[in-house]
Image 1 (cartoon, one colour):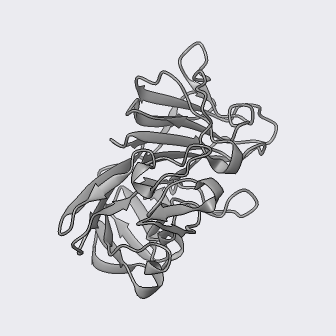
Image 2: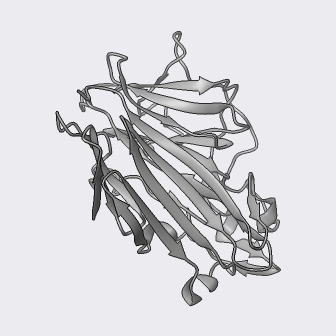
Length: 294
């Protein structure tokens, strides 16, 4: 486990998945990241690569071959290497291997640099293509924010306040793939989305077209807890379907899952990214601790 701190907030990052497992206030000890209790969900903030979401019939088509890649990809369960660790920042990398070529036939070098800036944890990603052919991929964040006043007796345990101009939501239905229809944003009269079992009755709220730029998690009293920001084209907000859970995931995705019935090549997956040989793609997201940091 790698720990970084700036005296205001401290982050603990596992070499497995380069996953932030804790983000807490130095003074009060308040925790902002879900602790991974398997009763609800054993993740914290996995990195999704080289795909996000589900594949229709579990199949990804690359250069004429049909390959089986697990949902959200394979780097979240792999061991990364810490290549630079300083007091308030740490960089991790993972590279393609003989093993990864069996399921994803591209050479890659993926790095994530975590930096603490005041109350904010920044995650900067780079995907380098060392080969001479195009590299097609998706990448996503999956941070889970703790709901501080969660209680099993509550119907609503907090709210989501979205920034941007969201006009509709998508749903992932059969096989975790996108349904063809769009749906209204389930916001209340104040424009806030209640965090409840009912809101997540179809598991995830999915936004596209860069309509969301940031999301603030609010507690039951509508006070801010944490803000996640990113310039990704798609966002998911997720809580396990039908389960009253003490966290909510705010997920910026550079990509989306397949549409139902999709049978095209990987290059036609929604919001797919392409890096030409010898070039590097960059992306980012950030988590800002807002509530009771002092």
